[in-house]
Figure 1 (cartoon, rainbow, N blue to C red):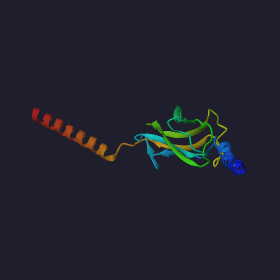
Figure 2 (cartoon, rainbow, N blue to C red):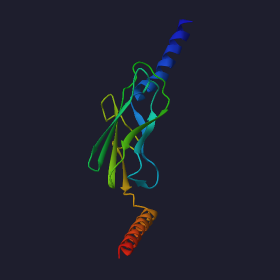
Figure 3 (cartoon, helix red, strand yellow):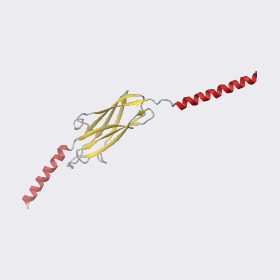
Length: 172
């Protein structure tokens, strides 16, 4: 009976060992800029960060995850911070998704860099992609005035000038 218990403990230890070894990593990190397609100055831009944790226990009520955004000219740095779970954890890939608001941006070409931290370290992020930060460039276009606005302006100017002519015609 004791031999069976020891055998079960050893088997369980070997099964949990990979969970403990892999429990401090993020896999398959992604960065997507929203909205998809043409982005104009009228759009509120956001960055969707995603990936998979190597185990359970990240980003819960005990270990909250946070994002912060720093915009310096056309460079955008997004920090995604998580805390590794403590103790024994299940070795399963747990997908995550967070959104960081970038707000309304001026026209130009931007480079967004998403840094994924685990326990304040960049070294625990593995691929694909195997780079940290994950980068994404995108362009924000100015919103041109619609042609109808120009036509309304010309129409109002015409009406105003016709009223002035009519007024001058009555005075003579």
